[in-house]
Length: 172
Image (cartoon, rainbow, N blue to C red):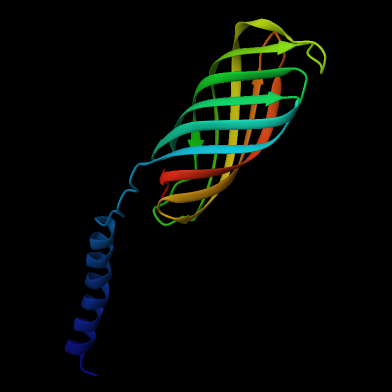
């Protein structure tokens, strides 16, 4: 090979990767869109049964939730909360799975001492520390199925539960 061809190949070998790296550095993947959903589920709780319903909104990895959760016995004690929570969740544009956790502030009330033959005594409303954890399978853009775990720590009686839930909305 002549020196001219070798020199040209060496210049191209140095210039092309530099321009390709500059072009790739300017590429930014599309940001995932915001998602929101309503969810409801039933399952097991510290007082026998559990139920939860809520509305969630996710912006990037930021998760905002408003939920109502309860754990109650068949004829006995029952406690519930209404909570506002903030947390973090996994997020990419094409994921069919989501995991998230959040913490917040809740109003908690309930009753204790009930049985088949007597009514329970209502407890006054107290402030609680609610937690949530969720794992969801998102088979469609509007539908999800998941496990939703919740807990509420308060001075009257702490409670928790795990539910199987259905999510409807723009889930992915």
